Image (cartoon, rainbow, N blue to C red; front, side):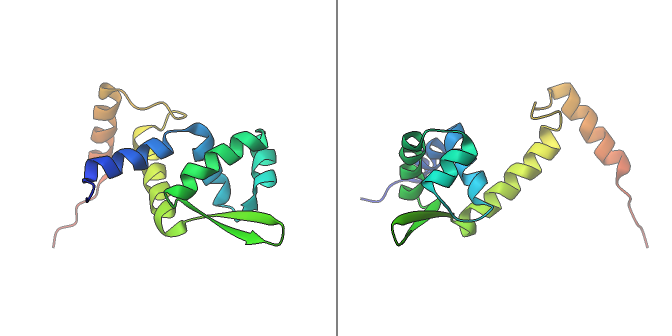
Length: 123
């Protein structure tokens, strides 16, 4: 039976709705890492990291590859880089105050500034 889009979206976003998983994804943007490297970089227990790697791998947000006695985790750049670009764009445009999202009034003011700074060229 084919799943509908809302179920797929729910799984997608619920997998991402975890600060440790997001930190892992952001860290893996810098290149492949093993679980020890990830745990040390995030100052987390290895068991916590391992627990959070499983859903990321299940959803194919990351890939793993065995190299001798260790497993290296890498980011699925095809999917995740466009998402990171979207997050960055959104946060810069709508949450410029250190991650705090703009209020309705601040958003209206931002739109006014954006509109006044646009240059229209006529021929």
